Amino acid sequence: MLPFYVRSLRWLALAGLATACAPTYQLGMKPTRATGFFVEGREQAQAVADSVEVRLSFVCYEPTRVVFEAEYRNPTRRALVVDPAAFQYEASRLPAPAPDPKAKRPKPLPGTEVSAAIAAASMALPLPPLPPNAVAAFDPEPEITALHTKAESEATKAAKFDWLGLALGAASLATDVASIGKHETPAQFQSRAAIHDAAVTYNVISTAAKIEHAVASDVLRQRAAMLQDYALRKVTLEPGQQVRGYLYFPRYDAADGLVVKAPVGGRTVPLEFAQVRRRQ
Picture 1: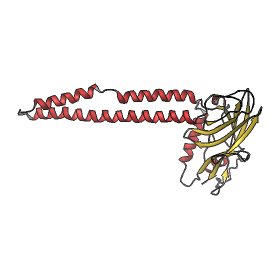
Picture 2 (picture 1 turned 60 degrees about the vertical axis):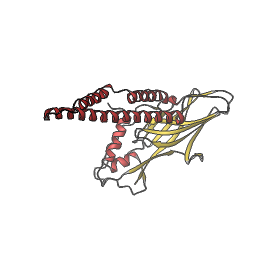
Picture 3 (picture 1 turned 45 degrees about the horizontal axis):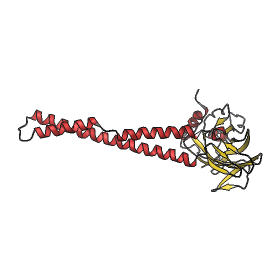
Picture 4 (picture 1 turned 120 degrees about the horizontal axis):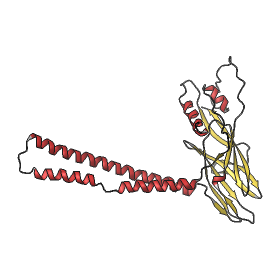
């Protein structure tokens, strides 16, 4: 059976392949209850446990992930360990309307916010099941390590000396030198031309491949650097300290609500978000 988030993304893909007359929706996320707390224009959900304040805001959707920013403030007299891998969310969905064989397909007006069930019905799509268990956030450390490892591998390929290219170039040069002052037969000319063309073609392809490896290495290093700079990473907050960083979860587009459970010491606190679809 496919993982729940793969089924969710397939549902989203099917939505994108719906007929031209079917409605389209813009997906978004916001705290279930207004708090009046904002950071960089984003409203934050807030919870307090054992005097520790936790705030969470929705940042964006990536192709396979939903990104939040978490903020911890520790005003206590004890140290607090914050571990992104300890975050989880539980998905929920509003009840679907009672099935009516005679009812027409829903046609929400532009600008209307609808539930996942209504959106699916309006596009004649089935709803995937909810995740059977709590969904854990990604731990950035293994990904950072993997990105650095892959970047080094790509850089090594980009810098690798191409002995075959050198040999082909040398062979082409040798045949050109050998032909100087000699009357070549058509067969000899074609043979020399074939060696020359093979050397040029191979070296063009080899150079392009080296450039691709170098670009891939740079992209991977940039992704690793972004995670290092922006992701919430495991940290010990001393008394009076605070920390902010991004959390990455698998996307689940077919949910109407996510309850993110944030760790505080040996317990968790819930931060509730509504996932909305606005008819375009």
